[in-house]
Length: 220
Image (cartoon, rainbow, N blue to C red; front, side):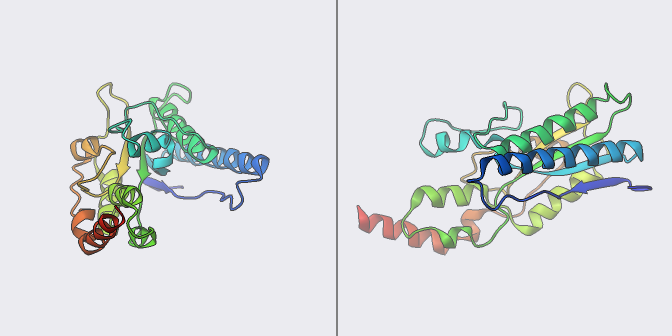
């Protein structure tokens, strides 16, 4: 990290078999430790900012409620709730980042951006069972194109001032395109760093959407 202006943290320990609950938890604890190591090393080397690949799973408890029509929208300033260890660990990444951004513990702030990446794949909508409109909506809501993801990370690194309304250099951004079906807010990313997504999943996958709707109609 020596001499770096910014650090982007994508590393993590994967858990292929989540049925081994003890190992699953141990791996996520290792991920939390890794995030701490990144923050602390960046602080010691006087890196200006750390940008972290968080995940939409940091607040994934709300998602089934949205898809069931019991909840409408999630914004980054809502309480992050997850019902699994992976999402829990991501929320801890974010909270640790906030601690470092405030600077009370170490005596100097470390600027911090957390990006809750959505669905950065072009294939998700093609893996859905024909006519499954619920899963189709989910895929459309969370999609982010490669160029939008690149823009979001670059602007998260390069924007000079990311301070919140209380002067803390900390932000959480949802990583999605300008999707018509979105249920995560990107308003703060637009405002703080000028994020201007170029893509919309409804336009990108219009032919596949039509297929799903037609098949669903025949099943009724």
